[in-house]
Length: 62
Image (cartoon, rainbow, N blue to C red; front, side, top):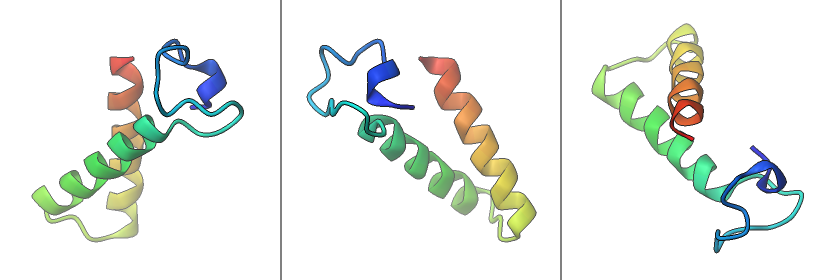
């Protein structure tokens, strides 16, 4: 998500106009890594599904 679209933009310490949300990116990368490791996923198809799942989980929380 872009910082400009975030509802927390005015309060966020990481806010940078027209840039990608650093907080969301860190949450996304961490979640993808944990899921890949926890479920011993290795293939490209697994990675694509995990990345999509992580995106849905993060966007669903906000």
